[in-house]
Length: 287
Image 1: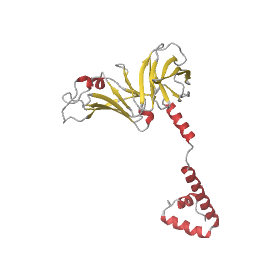
Image 2: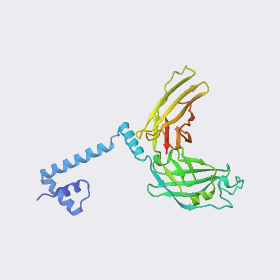
Image 3: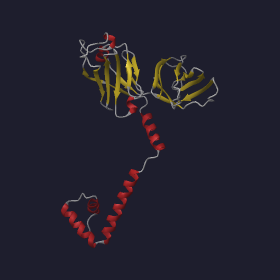
Image 4: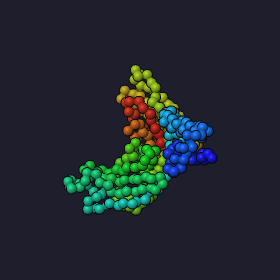
């Protein structure tokens, strides 16, 4: 009687009960048919292992990354305060008082921690006691959740866009703003990727205008200007979700480690000084 296919496969991967494994081993010595089954299964395992070790082409990795990032557009994650380390005798935000020269006070203090359970996001509120400045930092496993996202409290109309490291300087806030008001982390509603402009390096002045469009009918006009003092782009929102009339919208521009965030109305424009080194520019809308 032949062993079952399950027993043969478990024998190959060394996961069969010892007494049964010994019986299968003895059977294989005498049965050519079962030996062929075992060899076929070994070949199958080797092919699976070979495929798993192959390097995924970069274009497929980029496509998968793009699909994942786009799936997050417009999502909002509410935060809950889990630790409150505020102590007005020592810990305070810059808006609450002067910087501290007390050597016993840590240079950087964590004042509060807010979290979102799904996905697992952490927001740290920090105070630099020496510089008397404050910043927040979003912590997550994937950069899509912390880089260039909006941390906001709609209740008090405050919002801060993080940099590529998940950090953002904060100002004009009291400790009560984090104790008493709801905060959330918000993903962009639309993202535009702008490749470096091509131009004649010997031409002192140069300008070019392009229109970028999103899948949801957002239209943004970009004017590139190159002058002797440097390069910049001017940005104006023409349409939001196909409508030429829209409420003020937050726009964030980033180029490598440089970023800028402002709220724009219909007829406003935003200027952004470009880095000398040409590199991709990203424009994000939060509306």
